[in-house]
Image (cartoon, rainbow, N blue to C red; front, side):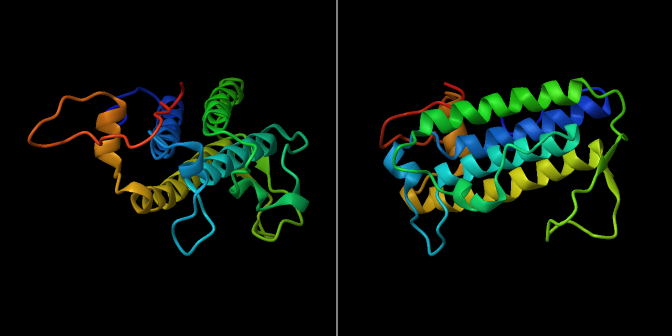
Length: 197
């Protein structure tokens, strides 16, 4: 997936393609990292690459729970813990779960005929508006895209602090682009974990 979403036809396909592009982007920030590197918090924040991927996975699942009006898989008493890659967790397991989450989202959206379908706003959540009764499925997909993009940016910064790796050289390495005057693929310094491997 070299940098841009391929041309697609139709709103649903476009929305899902852009959500997947952002999901892929955040997974790429983990390319070539060891578990220890993925768990590291090299900036003043408490964020890590592994923790951010874990968080966006939990957030996307929660939004699909809201769309389907089913009990959330998240626990509000443990809010914030999904930002932490625990010592017992592996980067491979977190990446695999993120891949599963993407497939689950596609299945949920495939089962909805109208992207304008109302999604009731959960009550009592401090960051949800009290004066809005419902969003649409379309709005939820755009919001998931926004969440993924925001945290992919965080992960880019953390990754650069870890080993100097930046998005396009990492993508070039992950996708095995040939070296060129335009782009030198990033050279891995640790155990490689391919996104989706």
